[in-house]
Image (cartoon, rainbow, N blue to C red; front, side):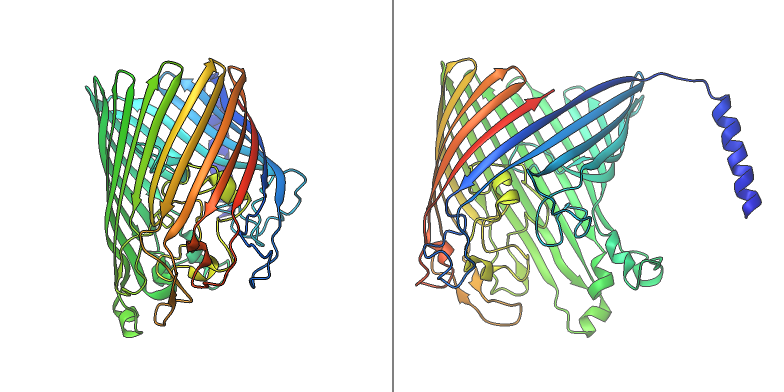
Length: 477
């Protein structure tokens, strides 16, 4: 065996010296931001912990992120693309110790401080006579409008073929699931029962561009067999996502629909013999957004419907699947409700009572987390640009739950239904000034008139409204 590797090394050296040297053009792009937040009552606890929850007072801190993307142009039509994030952490934080969930870079204790440098993407992008290929770790869950987008990184392959105004896209995504192969110790090879423990997503879509805009549709099939290692089960979901973007003079309109069906839990014979029950799944969502420019001013509105799950139907999941599908992490309609910056660094919008309402089938929390779930959402906004560099915007949003969760509900037990479906009303005001074309500074404030949904099933819980002050410096290059 040793001789084999010596021969292979020698052949590699010969091939390396025989290859002609080539130079690559290198282009850099990316962003840097630093953001400060002050939240007055993030726990929305009017008694500051005397309701039975933890004492959580006002929270104030800064956090930042440097993101650098590098494109190496090796030849015409051939590129190597990499991206890394650096110093993504709260200022002064030393909590990251290299343990916990490394996929999401969440510290074991629940903090969100990251390692100093995290390489996220590396893929080769090349164009051939039969189409364009991208292979490696790259951007996925990015389709249509901003509503569905998460822009997460996954390993996979994309194939893109332009045919006149039509672009056809096919892709294979390797979703997380390899950790299940390590059952039995780090030296477990995964052979035997774990040999087919894959979590894969297959995509086929098309985009058609025309004079007034574009329209597209994608079909995704996700098969997660990694669950077999744990409980002799797997999931098999089918998702259709059509969208359209239109512009008529000063009016812009976009819409997106998400329709999903399949099996959330499908047990094999061994799993059924052990008492496993199949659970079907469906998810429907609709997004509408319209905006009109009126000179230096603009007005617009958004509507979102996201079906929620009724935990009483133990053989069916009717919604609340966006977090498990990691969809719409990049959709930030408000400064507090479903805002990624707020929920990532401040925590989910919820109380000690909503924490008891986690869904036992979808595992979504009772509060409002990064992913928008289980909601009817309405928002109007208006802005004014007194100068090309200054943008002042105000918005009013109102939201309520499609289905009320149950406190203490388990898959085979009982629970108490939440007393209200009202998430509440949020008012936002922001002002953004361009210091340079690539450098902007935003200051803003939000006030959340908290709805009784956050009392959970406890009518005596004393709620308190919450307000947020924020400022953010953003550099793009």
